[in-house]
Image 1 (cartoon, rainbow, N blue to C red):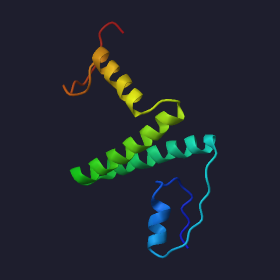
Image 2: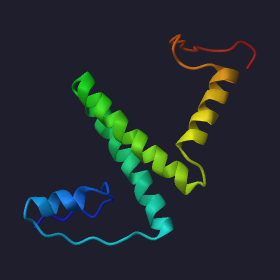
Image 3: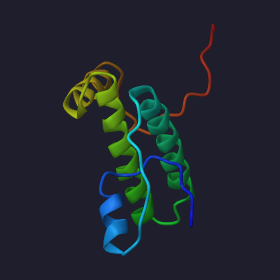
Image 4: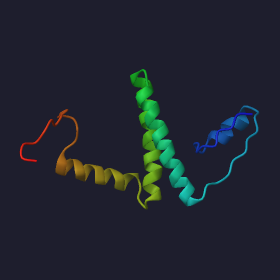
Length: 108
């Protein structure tokens, strides 16, 4: 029997049951949940860097976004507030569309 010991999406138990398999799960305590979400974000990030195609990369980015939204909720926020913060920061400092690579700053 494979042992996973990791946070999974809410629908995974139903998928396992639909395949005729049995499983064991437990509900994480809040601090454990944050720790596991952080691990999951790292896992999804690593999978993104290993993606071999645009399609795979987008799948991993979608997974990362799901984890980021869950993390925002653990910090008392939500995806709408997170997007507002992102937009405000982009307004003040810009985004990354211009592909600017800073080499150095004279005087620092």
